[in-house]
Image (cartoon, rainbow over all chains, first blue to last red; front, side, top):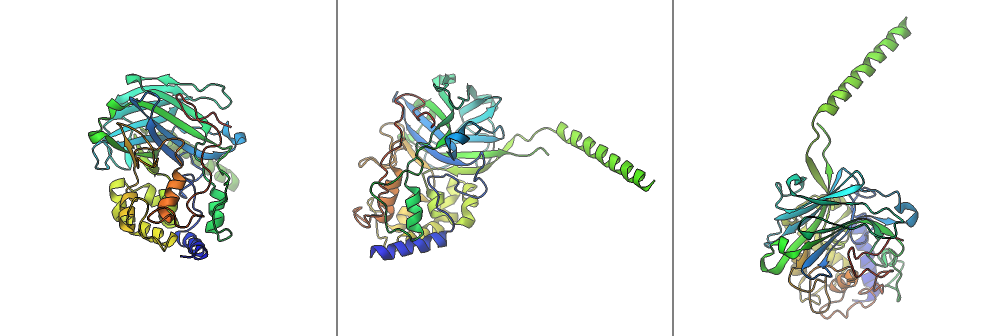
Amino acid sequence: MKRKKIVIMLACALIAIGGIVYAADHMDAPAVKGQTTDITDLYVFQGKNTNNLVFVANSQGLLAPSATSSAQFDPNTLIQFKIDNNGDNVEDLVIQAIYQDGKINFFGPARPSLTGTRTKIEEANFIGSVAVTPYGSSNPIVSTGAYGIKFFAGPRDDPFFFDLDQFHAILGGTATGFNNPGKDTFAGTNVLSIVVEVPKSLLHAENGKINVWLTTSTKEPSK
Amino acid sequence: MKTLIKNYLALILVIACLASCKKNSNFPQSPYFDQADQMGRPAINTVFIGAADKDKFNETIPTQMPSVFGAEMKTSLLTLNPGYTTNLLGLTADQFIGVLSTDVLNASTTGTTTFYDGTNVLTGRALGDDVIDVELTLLFGGPDGSANPTLTSDHVNGNDVPFLTDFPYLASPH
């Protein structure tokens, strides 16, 4: 197929698919755009200590430096890593993080009392907390909780990189391809990060594999 | 006199409201949280799900995603690339959507963790992984990755600042 035709199809696709195609998960949907619940990215990778796995939850993206000090974690937003350890894509374990009084409290990895989209804090499985590192602090505040699990929470550079502007131009029909070199739309922007490093042995993975998804949930109003 | 009655009624209303507010605050807070956003692999909701369904996608559990969104995602794939046959992984459109439509991030607990490094496929996601180039190549690159060469890489090959070698790994904010 000719390139030009592909580009035209792409432009049509954008209109068909609707709206702006946005990045990794940054501002992906109307209900979360600009909210404390807006996930930007999930990372899962082996730690420097290869007995550990690192889980990263980034939210509230595209923060300019000038906007970063006022970005806050929300006591009404529960952040969860949901972990399937037997291949059925249902969460067998959750690691939960929620803000309270300047710090983030962590729970798990615990079998959740509820699976699915309605959830509650697994209070009995509190494993520790970490003070939120303030913007402008020269060193990240790190703490270690139960089972040797390590915690961090605070603003970080957004590790995501993508020439999103050129992608938009392609989809909009004003460009036919990416430039070389491209320009990272996320350069110079920050996110609010939660980083947890967990011994792999706590994850009880069958066949050496897990499936992970990151969720944010909003506290139900008082009745 | 009329004004006086009006004010009096207004005062009663205010008191009633305050009383009810106070009463409400004595009720126990709900222990429950409702899901707002979710993500497994990068850019799935953003690229494959239509504007009208993006919130719904965020509130659908992974096991239900293929039946609820599989057809829509396949349409998106074939709209984005009408010439799609198979990709570098040898997946047909149905097979590719079969993998993507359950939006979870697969991760190995026994070895290398990477989105794709030329050898390992979907064994995690490291900070430096060029996930966009991987996805563009799988979408547009055809069976050997060489089709549509202007669309298979954004030529941004890494982050703007280096990552840390130690916890918390992510770089300090700008």
